[in-house]
Length: 245
Image (spheres, rainbow, N blue to C red):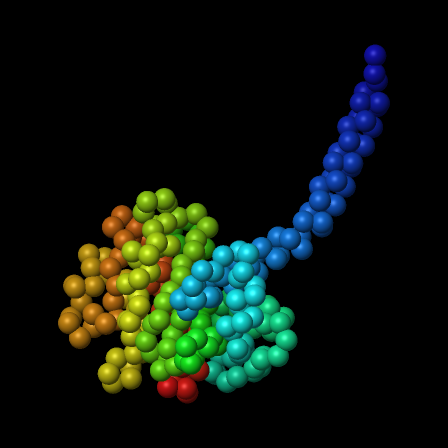
C-alpha cells in the first residue's frame, strides 16, 4: 500500500512532466501558429482588393507579388516608414498590433497604423485594416480604397464568435458586396464614413445612400459594431486620407 507521501511525490512528478511536455509542444508549434496567422492576415488583405483565387497555399506568394508598398502612418497622418524592398511580411507595417495601437489612441497617446498599397491592373489600391467589437467578441477585416481615397473597392470581415446565421453573416458576400462602390466622403469633401443601416440604406436621404449599406436582419448588435468599427478606424486614418485626396 502506497503512503500519502509517495502518492504526493508521484503526482507532483507527473504534473511537472506534463507541464514540461505541454510547454515544449507550445514552443514547437508557435512558429506554425504565427505563420498561419500571418497567412490569414495576408489573405484578408488580398481578398479585400479583389485579388482572385487566394488561399492558404498561395497567400504569401501573392502578397509579395501584389503588395508594392507598406506604409506606417502616425496620428497626424504623416508617413513614418515606407517599406518597398524585401519580403513584405518583414515590413514594420505588417508587424503592427492594431489592438495595441488603437488602445494608445483611446488613451490619448501617440500611435502608428499600417497601410498597404496594392498594384493591380495599373491602378493603386490602399488597404486599411479594420478592428472593432461585435456582440460576442472582436471583429476585424480590411477595406480597399481606390487611389481617390474615397471609393470602396472591396471589404472583408471576420469575427471570433458572432452568432451563426445572424451576426456571423458579416463574412458573407451578400453583406460585403454592398460596400463596393460606396463613398466615404460626400461631394463637399466631408467625411461621412459608411453607415450600416437597420431596415436598409433606403431609409437614408437619397443623397446619403452612397454612404450606406443594409444591416443584417437579426444581427443588429454585430452590425452596430461593424458600423462603429468602420467609423472609428477611418477617423484614425482621416488625417492621412485628407492630406492625400
